Every structure is written in structure tokens, then in C-alpha cells.
Image (cartoon, rainbow, N blue to C red; front, side, top):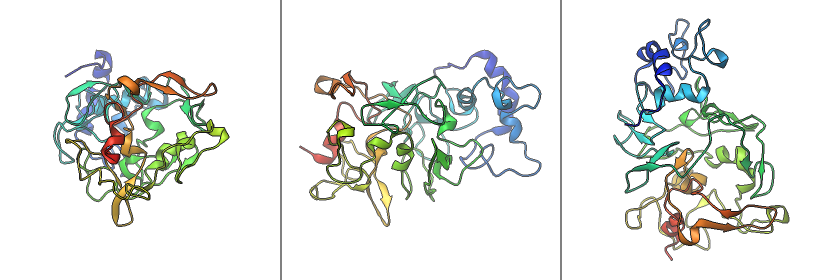
Length: 311
């Protein structure tokens, strides 16, 4: 186990960890508070806080690491190493559906260093396609990213305590009746709207969408069935594997058949490796051109294409 939390932080939160224990996403410290709750003290101190907003850790993300980091003292989901430590919500030691910020276990693989991640360090960074054309970046209206940019630590009506407003966008994701962090993906609801909140230029739902503002190029559509016309012969990538590899789909109505952003990309981080033709991209002068990381993809190179299209 890779121990990256500093000793001082571990000492500061020892008492708090005794309070929070192993917890479900929408209970304990993440909502359902009563008039005499002890949950506030798990993360906040009124007079001895060491971080902003009276946090017991120096930053929001450091606080999340206390329970969801490599020491895994407070939760079963180790999002830094990208796997489920144990508990009732998935396969023990299975790869998390969201990936990992430092390491990740790709399908059929062992945990390796992440090759692309969402940066939740609260450092200055811009989002690709945020109110601008694809291939260009813009600052986020909500400030720099932390874990709390997408998740509400005080609870949410959305699945996985996703915030109801992200970067100024209203977000609704229906909760799951069967919770699993490794074996089942997302319940009915618009998964892609979570990504669209910061990457709206990439949210294309019609065939052949493209414009001068988007460098005159086309982009893969989302929020449609995996076998939408003219690809009716495509196998179901969630139930028909390609040499053991598969891709998750979202529920649309009664059918679990919808391609969304998370079908190909991991929200937290990926350890996919890029080689050969997959190592470069070729956008024009106004966009990105040069070496490319793994772009949060679920599989090495552009394997996510082949799982569906089988060329």
C-alpha cells in the first residue's frame, strides 16, 4: 500500500476517523444529519481548524483523502489507487468505475500509475471545450477543481453525491437502486450532463455535428444507442466482450443501451497507455497539436473504438 498522506495530517484526523468508520455514500458524514449529529466533527472544527471552511485538513481534496485515500481508514473506496478495498458495494479489490487519481487497475490488468487525470489539487487549470470550441480551453466559472467541484460532501439527491449544480449547470443524475462501485455503472439519468457542465463543446448528440467554431471538424456523438443507425450491427459492448474487454452503457428508459461520455472515459483518472498512431493528434493551428496523454480513456490506445465497431 502506497502511503502518501503526511504524518501530521494523519495525526490531526485520528480522532475524526474514529467517528466516521466505513460509510455509505449518502449517509454518515455525507448527509442525513440530525439535530445532535456527530458527523460535522468528522470534517470540521470550530476553533482548531487547519484549513479554510473550518476543515480539519489543509485543503478540500486532502480532507477527502483521509477516508478515500490510500490509508482507507474511513471508506471502502480508494479513489487514489482506483479500487474498492472491501464492503458490500462491488467486488473487493475490483477497479472503481470512476478510475483513480494516482493509480488505476485497467480491465484485465494490475494497478499502474495514472497517465491522465482530472486535476483536483485546486491549482489553476483550464477545461477543454468549456464555453469555447473543441480543442481550446477556458477557465471555469466555479474556480479551480477539487473533489467538491463535482461531489457534494454534505449529501445530494444525485447518484454518487454528484452536485446538483456544477460550473453553473443544473445537473440531475438518478440514484441507483442497486449500488455497486465496480460491477454496475450508472443508473438512469443523463450521465453526460455531468461532463457537459465543463466540456460543453464536446457534447454532440446528432450525427455529423461540426462547425467552423469547432475547427471545421466532426466529433463522436453521445447519448444515443450503441447500435443507432447506421451501426445496427454493432455488438453490445457491455455484454459482448472483445477478448475480455467491455465498455459500460447507461440506461435510457427501460433499455441499458446508451453511449455516454463515461462509456469511453473515466471521470477520475486512467492508466491507459498510448503508442503508435495513438500518441499524437492533428488539430489545426487554433487547437491542440502534439503529444497526447491517455485522455482518460478506459483502454490502451484507441481500444474503446474497437470494442464497439469491431473493424
